[in-house]
Amino acid sequence: MLVLGDAHAADPGNREALLAAYEAADPDAALHVGDLEYYDLPAPTWFVAGNNEDFEIVDALRAGDEPPETRNAHLLASTATRVAGLRVAGLSGNYAPTKYDCSRDELDGGRRRHFTREDVDRAAELEDVDVFLSHEAPTGLLSYGYDPGCEHVTGLIETLAPELCLVGHHHTHRETEIAGSRVVSLAPVWERYYTLDPDRLELDAHETP
Image (cartoon, rainbow, N blue to C red; front, top):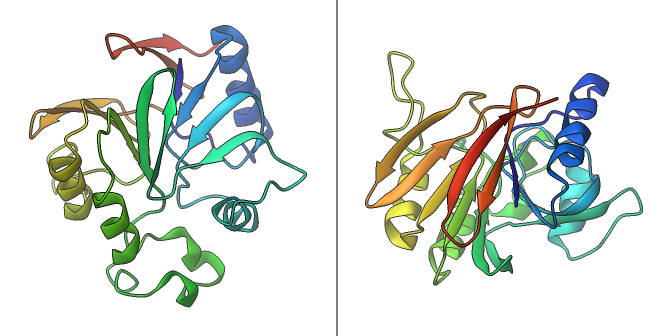
């Protein structure tokens, strides 16, 4: 299975790197942790929305529609599905304290990029999760002289207890363990792509061609 960090594939060079990763891995399925910005994909891909997306497309996918400019793009928004025998769940969006207690229909324009308390509560009700995807990082994973992580994501990891949690947003590879779950911040697609063995949940990194 192909695993991808941030793509920012509205940029032509980044899109070339994204498609090169698909070509190199030749996957049956892929997982992506947000800031995709391109939705016509070579293989079935389950992704969480980041803070940089086409939110008209993301809203349509949230509603269960399939816009004509999408192919193989499946949104995980406080939902779960089975991919290659794994139960994969995801929380779409990033955290904004001033918007967290809003309902989703109160978010408009660029504010649609955020997740809300409702989104987190709905994700917390999911069961039997093997792999959890989040664009926003949990606390305890990264440090810039301060911890940029989000306690709500940490809480979801503690509640859902996935074997593996994959996160994006920070464009850097880091690993830690939280409440028994392996947590990996993924490098961006233009630097590397990853492959995941669904039987052993082993994650391997490869330089993007």
